[in-house]
Length: 349
Image (cartoon, rainbow, N blue to C red):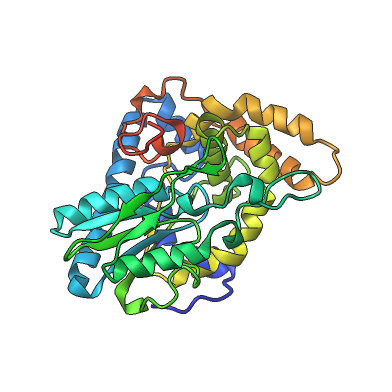
């Protein structure tokens, strides 16, 4: 396992999984927006959805096989990655694959450990910064994880994203004999979370939207732009947060993931690509008008330069891509359903 440290983006773009994604897209003519539009225009879009989902599912099954091969040494599987990379669906699918491989397990989502919204700090513009590890109750996380791995019962909080508060009731949890714990969370690799738990007992999985798609200018679309589009959809539909607010908050997301998440991409046992080459046309359906509104709202506003630039860039991507008006063709088992709703796995569905 490699040691985490400050990584240059050049190093990340040279990783084997990035090269594999680039070649996969090139072979199917979806390495450019122009090619993606051709797939939509000439009837190859349904086949693309099928092929993309099959590739993603196989990567999860391959990851599960590696966990099973580690045998009794693994007590905890951790799925982490930046915001809206697809951690929830990936973790649920991984759990299914692990069970098919004969492993008994329970799953724990670290999103339940957020402090109440009223206890989160605000900036001068009234925005909350709940993207850092400090937004989580790390002491309780570590105590719960330690207790569970030791076979003791733990009292797990339940967080309500609609109200921004923890529920009064808690969930009692205890691992049975032979069960492993599967943990999913934004900062699940943070050292405070797993303090005292040997790394040899952990299997770490990092998920990222490794988008290898070029726009009409020949520039690669940043991975973070795919994730902000996903988050805008999810926040507006399921978390009572408008797209304008989401893009205005994204500078916190980027600062936190650069400092506390991205450096761990090499401190993992496996990297999973959560980007879906068919998703931009779906985002256009849900976000095109909202992004135009965001661009106008942040134009020439002091302190909102970052939001204006991101909204403008994302709007530019959607300007170039054809829209998918009927997203019923997206399977309920697709990772994209985690964000647009109708998922076979996600509670929003």
